[in-house]
Image (cartoon, rainbow, N blue to C red; front, side):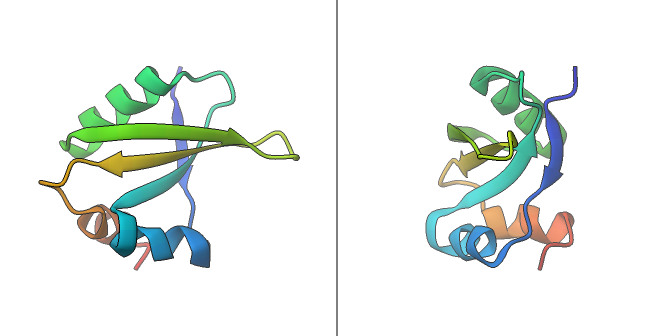
Length: 83
C-alpha cells in the first residue's frame, strides 16, 4: 500500500514550510504514522522528527511531517514544485 498520495499546496500548508519545517501531505486513510514516516524518509532521503495526522470532515487524511533540524522542508517543497 502506498501511504503518500500528494502534497498539500494550500496557503496555510506553504506557510508552515519555512516557519516550522513541516511538509503537509494527503495520505491514504488506512496508513499509520510509522508507515508515513518510513515512506517519506525513503522517498526524499531525509530524517523525519514527527508525524501528526488529522482526518477532515470529507474523510481525507492529512499528514503533517516535521523534518529533523538538519534538513529543510523548503528544499523538499522545491523538489515537489510547490514553491
